[in-house]
Length: 103
Image (cartoon, rainbow, N blue to C red; front, side, top):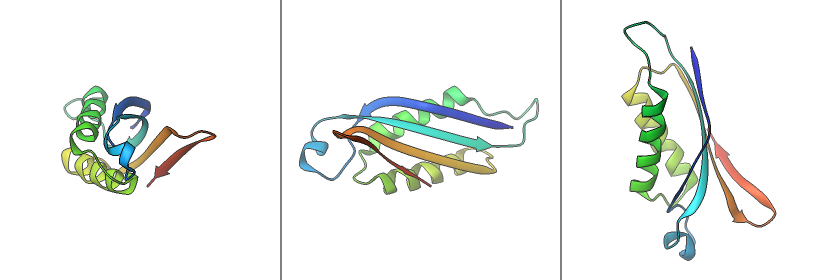
């Protein structure tokens, strides 16, 4: 089975610039993962979404790279996931584009 969580959005502290460490900014997170489904073993996508949001708000990452590596480790250690893709976007950091990073 494949689960896709698209455009999970919330505000958090993320970035290395002075103003990014003070003012929360909007982030968009896209996650897709595959796993072996069975009636006794399924992954609750609402739980995954909430875990990502709570983690991002708590950790206040400096770099998108650090955030992706942390989330990747957290999700792979928390769930029986076969493949995992994560993309984090900062839609408001630059005036003329959306900045994104993915693994």
